[in-house]
Length: 347
Ligand code: CP3
Picture 1 (cartoon, rainbow, N blue to C red):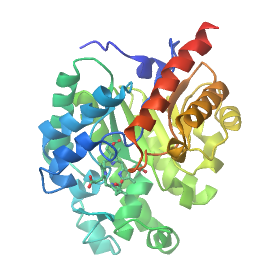
Picture 2: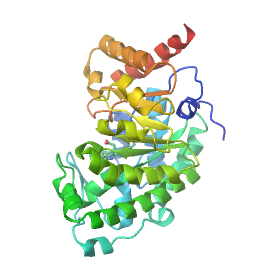
Picture 3: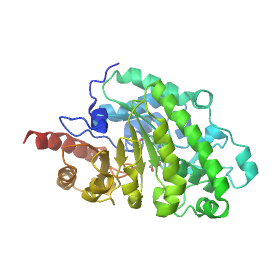
């Protein structure tokens, strides 16, 4: 199936585009009443993610309702630990929780490499259905967590400001940390390849907790494994989003990927200088800007587009859209990107 709107893929590859493509991290779910209507029919997030027809439905909602240039498959980064033998729960209003965590060699030995086909077949099925229903309208983004971010949840057991348990292991037992990170990496490579085979047109690696490591540890325990993933995925373009890793931008230029995600703390011009001309940059409006009056959203979006310029940019927020943002504000952002970025190219 040929894509009718392939702006995102062309921008990722550094090809010329008529306007800047736009989508939002965490666009599926969270902000749409239409999502909540589907979710409320079920026991919760996990059941929805494991029901392929419904996961496909909520994946496509933002394409229809918001007019984004890509869909991102409705799932979560935590399906990987579950497939490795560490199940998670989603606690209402609090987020994910792992009843068991990894702290000893025995815990580690009880894990296995995830088998994408048998353990994550429901995601692959959701991708196939989504591709069929999208019918080439926009590309479909597959995704996974970066090994370091997944490690954080598996060791800590839940979200945390410091992830001090996870970081403690890097000092106390770096060998064990490496073994766990390697097992996650191998599982993730196979999983991303299976997503691509099922129909994902591009894949993104989310390193949400990159910013809690110092530069040396980031290289040693996160970037190294992300690089392995990038080297292994040759089928489609790869995006790496390492939230908070401003200190690693000059090393990111060496990753074997097409696109680097920027959060809103990363200055656009400096990022371009540090990362170089050979990568597409994705981002990076502060998600809080969408709480502002429409004219201010337009202003901030235009300023962002002016700074990125007309080549190698995919417009997005600097992190996932916040759950209490009015979808109409998201539309202001999206429409401003579409109109203003086309105008920038015609003058
Ligand atoms: O982009 C999309 O909307 C696709 C779906 C998607 C979800 N999670 C669905 C979800 C994606 C891409 C993710 C990624 C994810 N999950 C990340 C990386 C991106 C980031 O935000 O940094 C992380 C760290 C997680 C882990 C996670 N899952 C947390 C911390 C939470 C609780 C807080 C929250 O985001 O709501 C979740 C739950 C979750 N994942 C929900 C959804 C729609 C809410 C669950 C519900 O509806 O009850």
